[in-house]
Length: 118
Image 1 (spheres, helix red, strand yellow):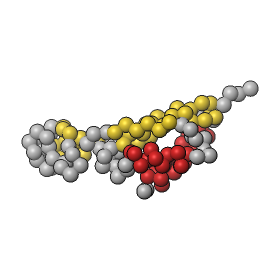
Image 2: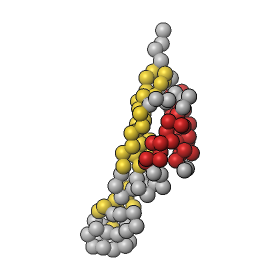
Image 3: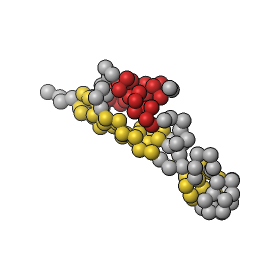
Image 4: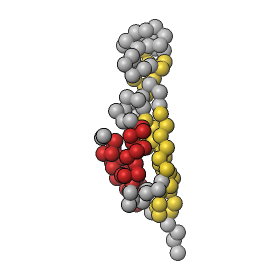
């Protein structure tokens, strides 16, 4: 279950962001994950409470948006959806394609509450 290590890395990014923004707490974290990222969203969601325990993000919600696998055909130029084991052009069927999305693991947004200055 490498998702715990991924969550711990995510928490390091969140802690740095919170420190930079002088946040009091993190209330929501949003991620964008593609099926080719090598990360299982449900396992990541299961690991999040463990990784965030005792941190500024403890109790925050974790929202994961799944991204489709998209390819651009290097032969006909069409862009189409593809599947995990079949990255072929949906228009002409050629196997020479360029991956456009589906392998990402992105921190897309963080909601936080800032400290009140006296």
